[in-house]
Image (cartoon, rainbow, N blue to C red; front, side):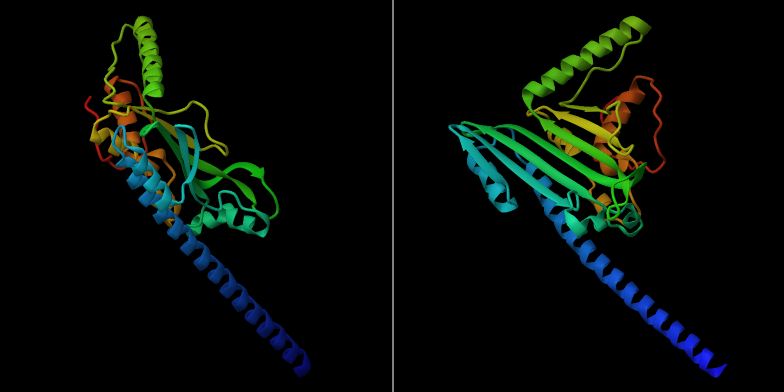
Length: 282
């Protein structure tokens, strides 16, 4: 009986030691991964600040300097140049690192995210700029991506397009849509854009998330530029996850919500939505 008790005690002791070692390994893995995510997030925040401050018609040396500081890849053909930037954490994870993409990590502030940017210059001036940001917001559709990465993530996404042609094209589409609405209902709607147009795509992102599209005129006033680039990248590392687009892009969402409400349309707005940096006049 004593021998049996000793065996049971030894087994329990070994199980406790193994459990403690496993907990230590997981804690160390989380600490390193979280630190890496925060480091890259801060780099992405500095990049966004630099891009938001770029004035209309910024010269080529200014854009090139930003690219050199933030690791942008420069490609030139004649007087046309492009610069590509990418900051991310486990957005693409090869091999065993895919374990970092498991959606269970969302409860511990460890989630995939990405901020990418594409800038084009023509001659010696800034011609167009496109920025895209995405962050996982929890488990999405019940789709298994493999034994390491587990279930599919749901995503919050925001794209910012700064281009005169694309802005005018989107503004024309909005006005045409507004005209049809007026004809069909007899109700007039607000048409003022203030240099910024925010749309919410009808189709969701992969996994069942949500996305906002921001179109910005190169000559938009400073308050509209602040709204366009007001991205809360802390959503990527906060222990309390962001689940609504208004938390990820508060000012862009505020601009979109103000437009919807000013025209008397219904808007399902979460109580978690904070106020934006700027308010669009109704």
